[in-house]
Amino acid sequence: MFGHRLIAPLLFTTAATCLALVPVTASAQAPASISVDSALTYNVTTLAIDGTATCTGGGTAGVTVVNASLAQMFQGGVGGPIAIQLNGPVMVNCDGTQQSWTGQLVAPGRALPNDSGGTLTVTLAQGSSTIATTGPQPVHITT
Image 1 (tube, helix red, strand yellow):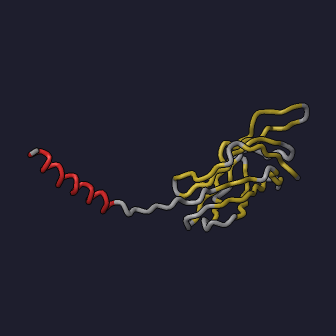
Image 2 (image 1 turned 60 degrees about the vertical axis):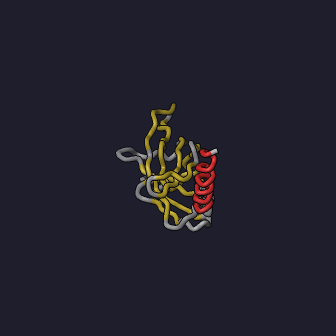
């Protein structure tokens, strides 16, 4: 019976402390999205790439092209891959509306083919966090 008298005040104090901590609210950000057009427009030394992106939370997010390569086309066959990358930063506003983005792809140290295809992945990042990705997408060059 003596132990029961000590437990009751302890339970009441613990319950009161828990109730005081309950009013915590959290809201989730809307999911971000990124898309890319499969047609890359040939411009002799660059390929134009574009798409759309949506993100929330304010500020900006960076568009990045990763794991991008084209098949090297030549008369009579296809050669090894040509690595391509964005030629400079591409940013979008994170205001909850769909934003169009555009950039230029280059192949450092290589000539760009004018008739080729390949794959690439586009990501959308805020700071060091990737918030959306296209996954591997097929692309082709148009003139």
